[in-house]
Image: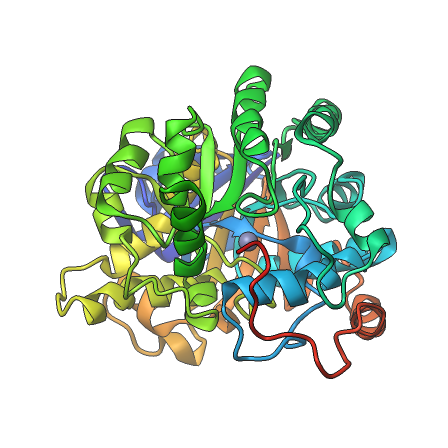
Length: 476
Ligand SMILES: [Zn+2]
């Protein structure tokens, strides 16, 4: 079935030349982009009777669907539950871990569905999820039912802390940590074999591990080698804070990325989440191995990671490292909104380096679309608006106040518009968000369930009690 959307005010293609088409037309041919060009060009190339539907795109603007390079969909029920004064390590060890450990299978389905709903409302059409706390079948089911595109896995770790910290239980450790790297990798291989390339290729499954202190060196290195053997990718957290880097230097005499590199752990199929505590020689290591980076701006702001202070993202990009943007999770960053991430990315380094040429709107849009697709190894099919690619795109309502009036559509998109001005989000040729509703989700029922489950998990995990640590020496 072919659909034509014509007379769009603009299309930001994010192709190799960052072409902007005015009075644009888009042909959706089943799950793919059949054609894109000016309305006159497209009209000349197609017989109007060949279209099942024709939409008037006046007062609509078009851009590729956003790609979230790092997200935890099992975290979506923890919005604004933890204190606002946590840095990365206490946030992870004393708050997120107990929370995750008490997310049961039913909670996780609700959490993933809620996250996907927020994403579709915000124009996100594809993501790299760090993976399920339970069987990834749950995440795969939610992805399959909603129609979104993405990569998931099983959130794996194998190195519990030497003694149980406050709030942790033996059951929690048993649920959260595999006995050793070998057992973890066997399980992850099984997950990839079961779930990779399902739902008409919309769903992929990778060898994902948590990374850093809760994972052994063997698991870090083994995950990438296993992923290579299976023809997929792997992702984990690394160099996520200056504290993690300091502890690594004290324990092993080297920073986290150097340690992985020294052990043949870097490669083109590895995506490092955060990578904020990075030394100059490590930028060259990442570039040399074509290792990808998922920068999470909101998470950096909220957890005081120091993206502007110690981060080397502009240097990484200058050295040829592919850097995408991620939202991390609704607790770590507050939202799953890639338009907010673009806004921060576009300006953070201009401000910090007193240089108006740093990053900016065009690069920020590329990071949230085509570069993100490269991070996920999926740029042959998504990330830009080009004939033959998958029909994953966002339509903006240019009558929304955010857009009245505007000159340059790119600047208006990144600096002015909010996701409230999104009219439609399409994935795989289907309008999944339209007329203020996500078509594949019972949103009213989901909200009721999400509130109840969030409160119950917080209670079970003991996070509503006083005395949960806000500083940590765990794993020091
Ligand atoms: Zn994360």
